[in-house]
Image (cartoon, rainbow, N blue to C red; front, side, top):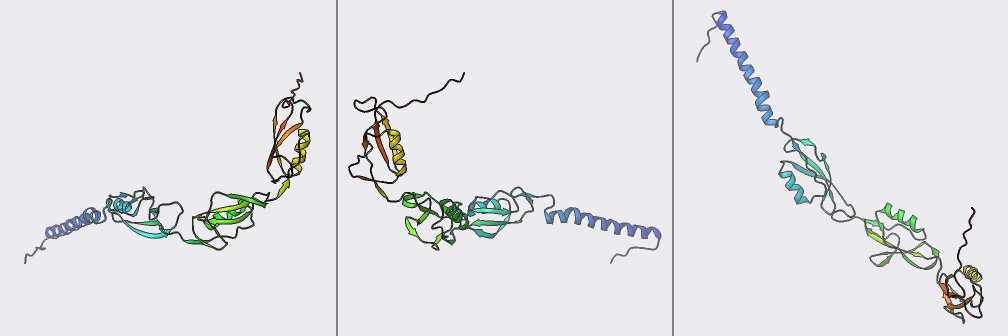
Length: 262
């Protein structure tokens, strides 16, 4: 075994210098070579935007960047593609180390079931708010003859009538059936022939009926503004409340007088 001479001060200084040199080599090698190599010092990877990707697309995007992932949550979102990426952490554009795990929220493939809220007897606008709170959507409204105007009388799902408390997939669309405020009531048709158009309009308004007027020009035997014909005719016939009676009126349509104040 080789021995180092320490018989003189110069030998001791040389030995100390060798020890210091070895320490410095070890120090710089560890902190500037080994440590950067083992921790990928100075190397960062930009996290891609995974939102909306399928599972396969997400895996390829992360594999290409040497990143890993973990599904941290799974939730249903109406209208979103099932088994697609909903959210991620870290956010897109973040700089991370190789092998970093990206935490993902996935859109559930199956919608959870929710109860149809009791919207019966409520106004359409109020019922829609209740549906939204339950995670359901109101579709096209059906109107039927009923005195309860704009009031929800029935609810349909997939073409079938359903009751409050029925379990329906979250995000589904249901149809409200509301009343028209008129109902199925019938009234006798009044005889308007020979009446002045203005008087007939007041009479029909009082019976919740409408009038459609058409002026046909001067007619012999009838003063201008007089009704000469109606459809449907009276003769004991009946019509629904809210229906319109067409009338023909003698004379020309009145014109508005414009006064010149200058």
